[in-house]
Length: 459
Image (cartoon, rainbow, N blue to C red):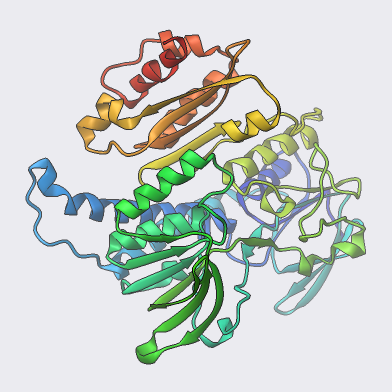
C-alpha cells in the first residue's frame, strides 16, 4: 500500500487545478485519470463544441452575405476541416494542462480507480495494479452520455455528443432526440452545416427548465432556421433502411409517425461515472440515479472524501465545477469554511442567438410565492441588434416588487450570455433595478438595451 496526503480521481475542470495546488502546498498527491487529460470540457464538451459552433455560425453569416451588401458566392462546408480545427483546439488544451502537471509531489497515474475501503483505492493499470491510500480523497469522475434505450437502437449507428463531432461529411438528415441544450446546439450547428434537421422532444416544449415564453421563442428561432421541431413526441423504435439510412417511429398526439433520416443523435441526458468506483466499498452514498451525494461543503457520507463537478449531480456546467474547486481549495488548503449555499449559477445555451440565464425564472419566483414584476424587451428594440442584423429574441428581467432587487433574467439574443453576465454582477452586488435603468452604457452597445429593459418597470 502506497500512502499519499491526497488523492484526486479525474481531471475535469476542478480536478485540473486542485491536485496541482495541493502539490504546490507541499502535499504528496496522486492524480488518477483513466482517459484523456482534461475531462469532458476539454475533450468532448465546451472546447470542441464551441469551436464547431463558431464554424457553423460563419457558414450561416456567409450565406447571409447579400443582406449586408457582401457577395460571397455559393457556401459549402468541409466537415473534415471543421473536425481537424476542433481536434487542434482540443490538442492544444490538453498540452497546456499536461504542462501544469510537472509539479514536485504530484504523481499522475493512468488507470481505473476502485474503492476497496473508505480511504483506500485499487488502481487497475495496463501492466497490473497499485494499492494506494490517503486521508483526503476528491472524486471528479464526471459523466457520460446516457445510452439510447429504445427498440432497435442496437441495430443502427447511434451518435452521441462525442461521436457526432467525428463525422467527416455533412449528413443529409440528422434526427436529434432531446430538446435540451446539447440537442439544440448540435441541431442548429448541423442545420447551418447544410443538413436537414429534425429535433424530437418528449415534453410539451423545449427546455422545460425555462419559462414558456423563452422556450417558445427558442423553438421559433430554430424553425426560422429551417429546423423541424416536434414536441410531445416519444421515440418508440428505430430500424435500418435502404442505403445506410434509418427510420425512426415516434408517437405523437396524432398517432404514430415514421421519420426517415441518415443519422440519429441521442441527446437524452447524461449518467455519472460511478459504477467502476465501487462507492459502496467505501460507504459513499449515491442517489437513485447513481450520482454522489454531498453536503454544502462537497463532503460525501464518508468524512474526508469529497466530490466535485458533474459526478455529484445538479447543473452540469464547467463553471460550476470550477466553483466547486474554489470551495475545496479554500477549505482543504486555506482551512476556511466556504460552502455552496445560496450560490447563483448562471448558464448560457450556445444556440445562435444565445440564451443567457441567471437567478430565478418567472415561474420559479411565482412558485415561491414572491410578489414580483416582470419586464420584457424585444431585441428588435435594441439598436445594436438592429445594426448587426440579428433581432430575434428578447431580454427579460424579474424583480421583487417591494425591494426592487433583481431576482433573475433571461437574455435570448445576440451575445445573450455576455449581457446576462452584466445583470448577474448587478445581482451579486445587490443593486436595485433602478441602478440598471439609470446607468450610462456606451452607445451603441448591446448592453445599452438594459436601460430600456429596466426602465420598463417605471413606465
